[in-house]
Image (cartoon, rainbow, N blue to C red):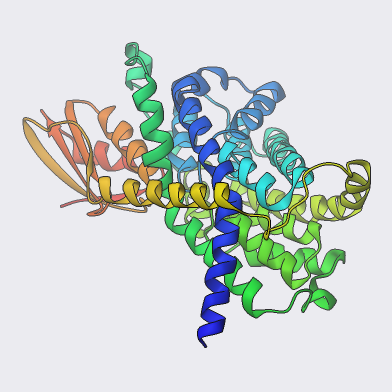
Length: 415
C-alpha cells in the first residue's frame, strides 16, 4: 500500500514538473493577451454576416484562455455588439478547445505535433460550425434576441481604462490559475494514478486505433466538464492505457468544447437549430480530425526525428522548482480571492439577485457587465461563492435585470 501511494506521488510530481515551466509561461502570455486583446477589441471586429467574420471569430478564439463556461458571457456580449450568430458560434467552438496556456502544456506533455495540430483543429472546428450556421441557421431567431437591448456597456459609450502590467500579471497569475487550478491538479493526480497502477498499453485492444476508439473517447468527453489545460494530463493517461493519438485528440476536442451548461445556454440564447449544429460540429470534428491525426502522426514523427522527445524521468531540479512555483501560484490565487466579490461599491436603491450557473471569474465579469448596462444602475457587486449580485441605482427594473443576466447565459431571480 505504501509503495503504491509513493509511486502515485512520484508519477504525479513528474507530470506536474514537466508541464509547470510551460504552464507558467502560458499564464504570463495569457495575462498579456488579456490586456492586449480586450473583449471590446474582439467585439468590434466580429460584426457583419460574412464568412470572413466567421473566419476571424474562429481565429480570435484560438489563443484566448477561456474555458467552456467562461466563453459564454464573452460570446453573449459579442452577440449584443452585433456579431452574427455564425460568428458567435464559431467563437464558441474554437475558444474553449485551446489557448496559449493549453498549447504550452500540450507541447510539454504530448509533443510538438500535438501542439501544432491541436490549435489548427480548434480553428477548423470553429470555421466549420460557423459556416454551417451561416448557411443553415442564421434565419432562426432565438426568443431572447427578440427582447435584446442595445448595448450600453462602457466599451460603447466611453473609452475604457488603460490596461497595465499589474492587470496583466493579476489575470495571468491570480484569476486564471484560480479558475483552472483545481481541475488541473485533479488531472495531474489522475495521470499519476494511471501511470502508477495501470500497466502501459493495457487497453490497446480497445483504444488502440480506428473509428471505434475515437468515437468512444469522443463520447467520454461530451458530458463532463474539463477545461482545455486540465484535459491534457487525462489524455496522457488515455494514451498510457493504449489509446491512439487520434482517440486522445478526439477527447481533447469534445471534452473542453461541451458540457451541460454550455449546451443549455446555446440552446436558450442562440436557438435550437444552432445548438444542434454546434453538437454535430463537435462530434464530426472529433471523429474526422481523430482519424486524420492517426494517419498524420507517424508521418510527422518520422519527418521531425530531432524534435522534442518526452521522457517523464528526465525531470531534475529545474522542473522541481517550476512545480513548486506553480503550486505556490495556484495556492495564492485561491486564498487571495476566496469569497471575494467583484465589482464596485453599491449606492442608492439596492436589489439583490440570486444567480445560478457562475463557475469562474469570467462568469462573474460577464454578469457584472450585463447588469451594469441596465438602465439606472450605478454600481454592481457580484459574489461568486455566494452566487449573488447586488445592484445599486435608481428606478431599477427587476425584469430588465433578470433578462440581462439571462442574455449573458445565466439564470437569476430577485431575492
